[in-house]
Length: 495
Image (cartoon, rainbow, N blue to C red; front, side):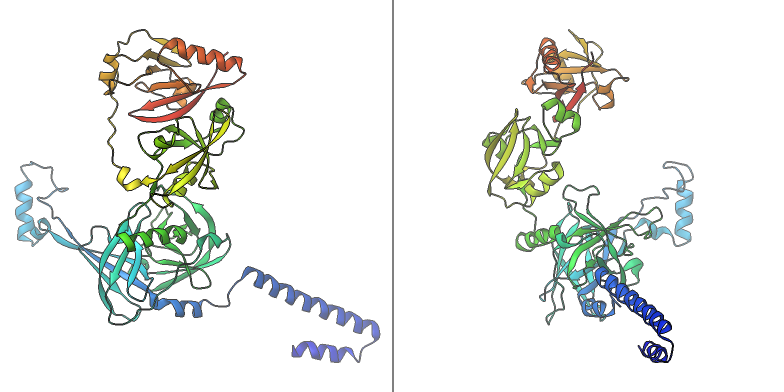
């Protein structure tokens, strides 16, 4: 400020026009400074992360796991098994003290975590502690405590641990990940590459990322995340945990600015269940579903591609409520359903045993069903028989829409390992140049519906094709089953 006041003072002794020019230039510079300050405030850019890091570091921990790994039974990888040189290399290893490689050995791994309560509950990734015989927690001050596993959830890669301390432990709280916006500042802490208690900062690069899990809801960040950061916290600028650092996208194993943290609003539900039950208890609707694509929507006469298309309703809550294959679920428990992923997450986050209202679109009309949810974990694990290649001989075949189909019979049921009650048209061949082949139909598939009507004879399929053409539709919706798994496929109608 002093140079500015001096400039004004000097201007007093200049001619009037010069003085005005000086004041005008001074005003411009002040406005520029204010504009820069306002822009910085709008960005929320901190002058330093030091105070935040200092306040939350005591609650972030390093995790070391020890696992017993079975040793090799011979010189595998050096000579082929059964080779006449196998004994020679085994004796060579023993003489050089390498024979211990055949014995069980201890393997260590490093990760990160954070304390969420003063009585010693610790959150980390499941893959950090999976299979570990011993888990050691190292605190910021250097103190070490053994930990026990309270529960794990491989589906979200979250694990809950517990340590016993003689005094209250520093801890951090979860924040609301739904309030995180793309561009917000975030800070990651953890144990990258075994360096221990390292801090990196960046922004939220994207939201609602999915990798490979059913319940994925990742925050993407450019804050540096490396091996060893797994299980560590991602903080907002208020010091709340809005994510658990889980994975990176990298061609070389190091950070390239694309890291993924499981959103806290997913983690908190998992942690609460692990703490209460030692396991997860997710809601189960009891349907098989697929996304509504544009061609499927056209074939069904739907105005939009939103919702989840029901392909099968096995015995369970949805069947008891009257849901049917071909229904499009558009609303669940008062919330709109945009696609299959959103429905799976909504159902999974709903309390087991709760009665919910499900709105479906059935043949152009909406219906509301009341469903009492079951528990997903109890419903999983049902084996599905694998399909087998068909023999070349098949009776009463017809070529339709690039498919060679045949009515179901006992011989085909036996080849496909289907129950005696199985009905439909069996695909015995697919033209590799056809749209059907491009959309994944293969020999062994079973067409059970066409135009949302059951088909057991070739004539019935031909009737549905003709009816779709008369209705002005460009495609026909088929319900296809493979190894028990159903899906809808829309095929264009050739003129």
